[in-house]
Length: 361
Image (cartoon, rainbow, N blue to C red; front, side, top):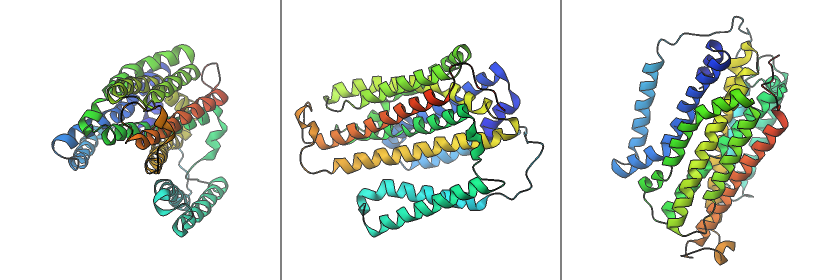
């Protein structure tokens, strides 16, 4: 993914680059939009294991499509060896963090394994930051973050991808609490898929008219409103399905408005010889955001679902109350995703200038 993003900067400029990034975003965000619907269809027909076999087939097709793509290399390549130590420290820290988030409720937050994992996280993260800030050829080039626009685009990208936990929680809720099948729950996301594919080019046009700041903020606001609708878990099943469908559609519209302006702000505000590294960090933020956001959302949902007694939602929940704990847990987990979107808006407001894109230096 970083390599494909770097190619956009290497071969296109100005509006042509923004149009290319729009189609790149359609492939990236649009592909993710297919996941819930495709996964539900496969799981309900031939079985969930086939999802993995089909993913392998997609990878083979992708390999065939990318053959013959011309190389684009920087003229001067550092003679310093690759930062294997920094990479290893980073992977260890992130693995420990995800296990802490995902398994803390199961293992016990004060249990010896959790204390050990927390120590591993702190030590590995400390070593990582020390090496990356002192080394000559770091795995993560922190100097890129001196550009405020790039920093804002990358941080908001991390947080918006973290909101992927919305899909996990909302679809798990309707399957566990309402008895929907994986296919039926997947069909709730059709509006998300259609909306994101239909509005990415709109985001491109807004970028060209307003610059990146306004469409990024507008996209975040619409995304947050959509997630907020999915958090109305006190409703009856039929009402919730309708509201969640609208919410997912708004989620897709918001991401469509956000995608191209954010990506263009990231790649256009770094020097040409650093675009590969910048693209790598930007896309790493996407992957980390999704992984950590899903892990935290799942941890909140799972942890609160097992709480004893009636939840605070007991007095307002419509219909059945035997599943009120699950509904409350889902609401809290979904509201966490709303908070992440709100933080993304703050980051954009602080870092991305009101005028056009910041020039690379």
